[in-house]
Image (cartoon, rainbow, N blue to C red; front, side, top):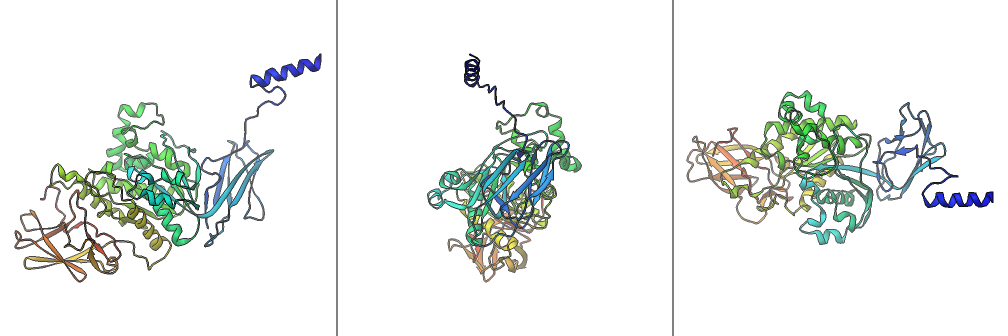
Length: 497
């Protein structure tokens, strides 16, 4: 009867989810949600393995590329961090590796790991813009099965305080996973892998409609008087700062200071990476000096927090968009693009132009392939040392005034095969003005490695502007196909026409 009674008790407990003889034990050992099977591990840098265990417990980390384990002790709070040496990636080597973390009787295994380079992609909607939305999505997805390319799409989150966890899974690049991934990020990573022939990992951690201040740490905003007054204090003094924050998207919430930094950037600070790709600005497009200052502060803050020196930071200039349909004289985006170009004064940063791929009726142009490829060319030249690869378009150097015409010269290193136009027509969107500061459309022609411009209305030119409108889809480029950067030779306020 006694045995029958215990049999009956076990059946009742099993049906009710209660295990009388094998009580549930909460797992004590964890690894960061950033660290997963299928991820890429950054070559030639320490791989930090972190998580939680019982306070004081010994944690052993064993990587199959090491001869022995790395052992650390969890601190009083139950946190541990082990540092694993990682070798250099070898060309053509796509062998998958494994790594285990154990403590006591518990063990966690990470499998199907690759050793290569990780690039961290962030920004707003034009970086989030997915491969399936591209103008050439069919051809992109037809070749998207790339086991050596790994992707991590990070789910949206907000946090008032720095957090350490994320939601999202590392995956192989397949048509299904690539379809929903950042188009600019994917083309960038695919192009790198094709040239370097090593594993590449891509992380997208951003959200559409976001503003730069959302990606800045609170303390950085507070210690800069301009950023504090422009972004932080207005938020702290608003009712929004006292709301309970959840993960749901609103257009207003993604503009709040520091919340996205805490939730989407901070969790990755222990991760070794190769560099950053950034595409953001449309939501800040009415700003000038403060945007340049905020973005430079953000780059410095990220580099400091990641603790890996002046990591490469590549970013995209906002594309032409048809604001001019409302007011042909508006130059809001032109002045903003100028503010973006000034970010390049910070070391190891580089901007790519989109002046030839804009869409008058769409803030999110579908031609993302050239953008990703240009970012990859920057990385190949500037970061990987492939100096034979051009990576930038013609940039203004100086002008010469001769009578009623002006000759524009470009910096020699940006000519890359000389000047040309994409469509064989004369260069468009040059303007001249005289002492009245009224700009008139100018006729331009290419003369060797320079451009000469003149306008019938301007007998004595004093200043030139190029592509200084909201929507100038340009045709002037160098021999490598990179568009000329917009510029102006004056420094007058915005009311100049």
